[in-house]
Image: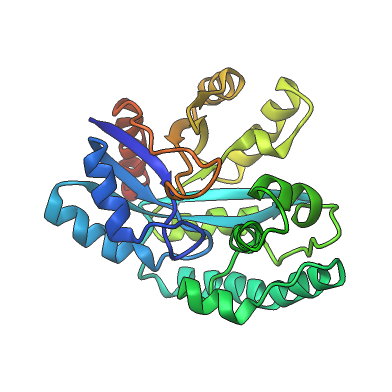
Length: 277
């Protein structure tokens, strides 16, 4: 039995509730998972409680939207105190920014002939934490695009006509918040930063390590990135692994993946050192 350390629930843009996520992990013979919803920690408590009942270890986590210069980066926090007021207040600011952003996206889409009822979408999904993937899935359902990829490529990604930038916090602040909440910080899917090559990535991660970053998501969505593995080893940073699971009914999404439990051992050792320091 292994681990999957990058999983989303209905509290952000996943389609499984925390309970369903934990039960599905058990079905997949995965012994440890991490709940890493976007800019919210609300689903952690339910998942932890269910996990204890059915024998699945749940590491409380979060995925925070951050910026570093012009780059948008996603920071994973593991073992965070999900009841920390400071963390919850900061995440609420980011979620409120989405609430302001979404009507602007919908307004732009309307001008392009794509009509999305945001209020109906919130009621259907039973959440205020609407993300671009939610809007993309609704566009597919309504027949405006054939799949989520097309929705992003034609309308929603950076540089496309319905894109609206969102509020993000600086990466150093996010790393410090995670640390203050007893957590470990890791860069998610690092190749999405699209730096030019090994030397540029190495230089960037040296900088991030210097401001407190603990690790790199080396194994992502079924793929092992040899360049990231080499950088993590060179800089003595922890290596994590996750499927970025959002639910089985989401087109193009990865299933949960049973990664080696050695990854968890390394993460726990670093967390233990952090607690003692």
